[in-house]
Amino acid sequence: MNIIDKRNWYFIISLLVIIPGIISFLLWGLDLGIDFTGGSETTFVFQQSVTPKTVTQVEKTFTDNHIKVGTVQSSTNEVFIRTAPLTNKQNAAVNKSMLPLFGPTYRQESFETIGPVIGSEITANAVKAVIVAAILIVLYISWSFRKVPKPASSFRFGICAIIALLHDALVLIGLFSLLGHFFHVEVDSLFVTAVLTVIGFSVHDTIVVFDRIRENLLKSGSGVAFEQIVNDSIVQTLSRSLNTSLTAILVLLSLLLFGGESIRWFVVALLIGIISGTYSSIFNAAPLLVVWQDWERRRRKV
Image (tube, rainbow, N blue to C red; front, side):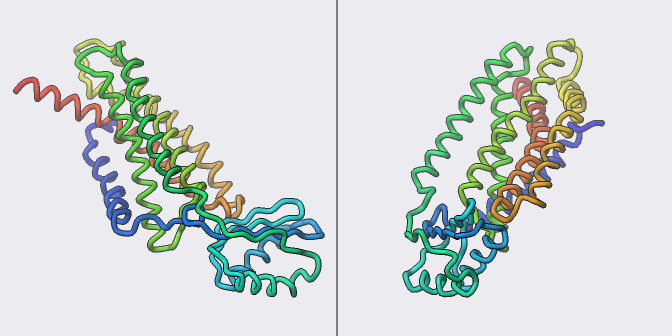
């Protein structure tokens, strides 16, 4: 199996996925949920135990009154719901609609309008954290791979890992920008969690492949081409990478089917990220090493 020989095709596939997402993000951005924009929080207390049907009825009461619902959570006898900002008139209309459903068995415990849960400062700090993590990853990989024989460079391993990481983040953000524009899929605090999780998974998967390349570089003699070593390393780790990703995907598919509406798009984001992370580790990060190595060799000959 010669994966490296077809590397340009893999790069093209990545660009075909990333470029529409980048254009969408620049034109329309992301459809921000209530966690980013702020809204109202309402808590209802029930005399009887809260059932899934109760939660559905409460949520439907808001949507029937044309109120945008963000998140819905429940405990033994409480339902907590976050929505777009409510006026007192809208709040009264909701309570009026709930009376025929629940009668005197419920009461509104609290109702307040809140600011964004995720403000610009938190978003900026998340971006800074990713940048600092990227720098640390480059330094760590450069140090860990410092014994790779020349002309290979440990620094290139680190940079290629970061490029794969950025690839996966751009795929996820771009696709959710398209989903937000065409299907009104909102991003919330769970989306930020998904992006950070995907970044961690991407680096982990890439290092598995890179570590095998390092081992084979140390074992092989100088007569073996770098391109051949990289290709052999990818093939040797291919089943492990696919099996690891497949187990995670199966769990996420189960959550997608049975996990409920509140985490649906969080699970979708993780699915996209894991698939993208597996692809970039095998078909982008390692082939980029070969491209960079070839470029350096030609540059030295000039």
